[in-house]
Image (cartoon, rainbow, N blue to C red; front, side):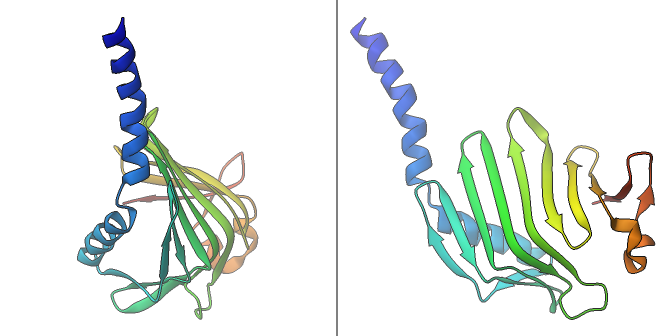
Length: 169
């Protein structure tokens, strides 16, 4: 009975220790290195660690040397089977004619649906929700008022539920 109790304690404490002691900054730098291979560079950011989270303030995201987006704050929060990324104050294509402001944008990955990433947000085009299907490599975003902005209507399609954007990656 003593052995069973010790094994149960170990099964509870080991994942907790892994989550708390995980080298979050080093994992972020590894992600940055992998993104650099795809010509995506994140710079000018300030990084701070929490117990279960990593907070990135004021990053500028470049694609092939061109500024693509800026954000006020990106917060990565992870348990072993659940990861959530919150973007606040995200401006995509800042300075271009077709600028999109995302006040709040969240991406969630769970081991209960390992082949999908759920996305949800509020933008200058209205509410956004959707899903990225990893196996099919398809991103579908439902956009509340997307077709009402003529600059974006050429990228969007109309369905019974409203406007949506669909892309393969």
